[in-house]
Image 1 (cartoon, rainbow, N blue to C red):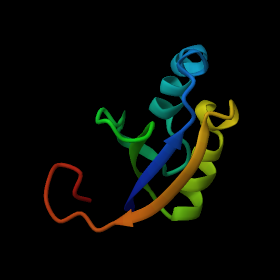
Image 2 (image 1 turned 90 degrees about the vertical axis):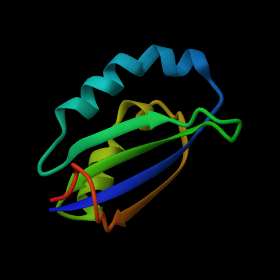
Image 3 (image 1 turned 60 degrees about the vertical axis):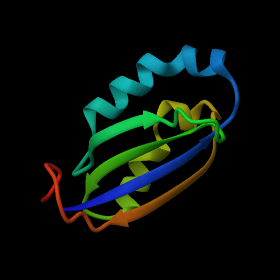
Length: 95
């Protein structure tokens, strides 16, 4: 099992996010296959709209497939996404 950081860029559409937020949160809480969300949240600084989701999974491809079906993604609210395997060295998310 590996841990992946998924970095998202979002459109500026508060009403769009409000419309699917509950479905998005439920989807991430359920996970799929080996994918489990360890943490997720939006950036709160003055930078562009976006978020970080930390996911455990067997491969980057599996994590990508899981995130492809996220309601924020399917609603067209995501403008960019990068998934990178994270070599965690310390903390409660250690495998």
